[in-house]
Length: 157
Image 1 (cartoon, rainbow, N blue to C red):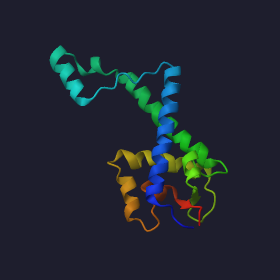
Image 2: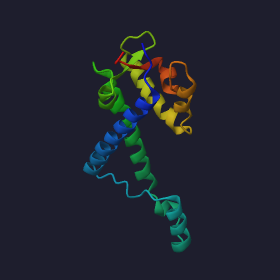
Image 3: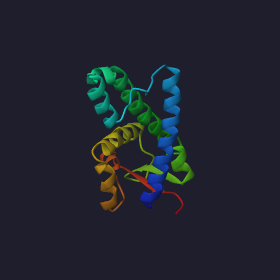
Image 4: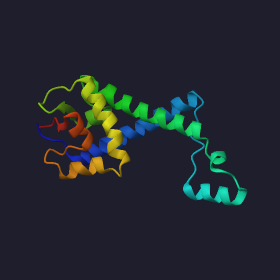
């Protein structure tokens, strides 16, 4: 099993994330969930200072929570559903001929895939440290791969 190239993995992840972004935005619009409440930090400070508005008036916390929850659930489902198929990969991983395997080279269980993708959120939320770990790992494993006992392999070889 040849570990996948980190650059190729990153490109596949970015492209999959773009797909997720478009689909999740369409679904949220369909259900009336807006992301219009998102403002930059500078805009927020300006609005507070100029209009004497409280933070809760600027950002609808309930809408933000709903948006964040939906985004995270959709992220985990997208990756998990595709990786649980016979492809063992998302559409972009498949294009780049990458597959998810367990530590023994077998198709991972759905439980292992779910754990991996929930852990992937953790990998990204802590200053991307979970992804940076892969740079120093002999088998190019990110934190979520280590937690789930999985490896991303290049099927070209």
